[in-house]
Amino acid sequence: MATFHGHFSSVSLGGMQTSLQVILPEHHLSTPNRTLYLLHGLNDNETIWTRRTAVERYADTYGFSIIMPFVDTSYYTDMAYGKNYWTYLSEELPKAVSSYFGLNPDPASTYVAGHSMGGYGSFKLALNHPEHFAAAASFSGALDVSSLLEYTPEDKKDQRRRSLNIIFGENSDLDSFGGDLFTLVNQHQKAKRPLPNLYQFCGTEDYLYNMNTKFRDHLTTHNIPAYYEESKADHTWDYWDYCIETFMRKISEAEKGLD
Image (cartoon, rainbow, N blue to C red; front, top):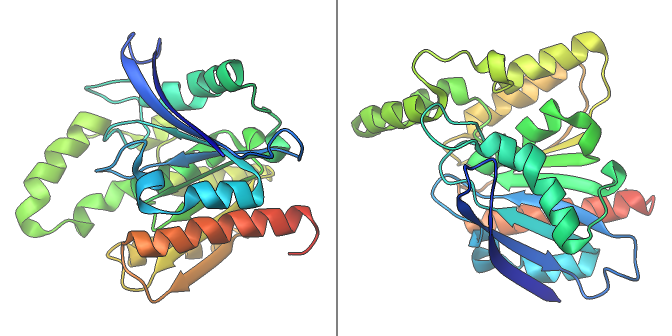
């Protein structure tokens, strides 16, 4: 197992030094290599998955190289008043990891997953660039950003409203930059466009549970197949540790024809 944590200057982020955590399994040179972009949540950073889960062990077990970028609190968006994290994630980062680590850019072996804000980022990447990914997973994802205020405690709504204005702008049109997942689903269904395999996990005790069932039902209504799993769990790392291992195992089994 090899792990790397480093910094490099990002053109998309205006020359800012940004950080990156990478896991390379020991046997990645001798087996078909899979690349997984693993995204963090709102109050986390690029190190959170290695600190709170056994993802290093899972990477070695199932043969995944894992790329964990830092995107601050951007909701994986080119912020109205901030950095262009969407451009960084979707355009610059794949070229950087290919150059630095020689990872296979083949869409058939490239995946994306994340928790909470990262679940939104995962599906946003997959639905805006379906040609780049074999599968995407959301764990307790904040999948309906247009209704985030509805899921915010009353005493924190003003702070959340200011944060969302910084990210998306006042009275922003999410559809104008591919930010609304529900609209993207509608567009793909209408165009009969092939999509990556979608995996959605959420705990029934999670405060985002209703948001997740709403998105699950939206996929079903538009005849877009997806794997959906719920458990008696909250918005916790114990659950996300289970989710990431389950997702990686299912990908491995599917490629072997066992799923």
